Length: 137
Image (tube, rainbow, N blue to C red; front, side):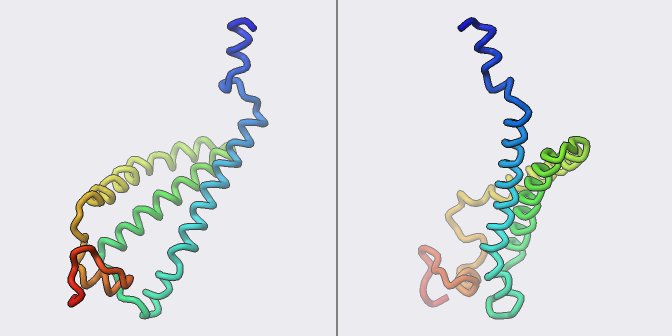
């Protein structure tokens, strides 16, 4: 096989059908991520709204908003690409200039070993005991 033939057989020369298949896969996985996130957080959200669980601090609400924005942007952009609407895909892509840094800012404190809010609040929210927190809280 010559060098030219290897270049033609490379993934860069994938067929339109293969590319469309990948686009459907990425869009489907993005929407699956959205559905899993909704299903995973719905019970806790319903408990908070119904008053069965303590209202979390503002930092938790901000985290939810930032991450929901990121996951939604991912799904919308994958769908727009699948639909061939690259003009809208690029416009929505500008939102990533805001959402991306917010995700980084939101996650910067996860290496900190101290709880982001008082231990008593954490215990009240999910019944989980923070390492080093006393049972008196």
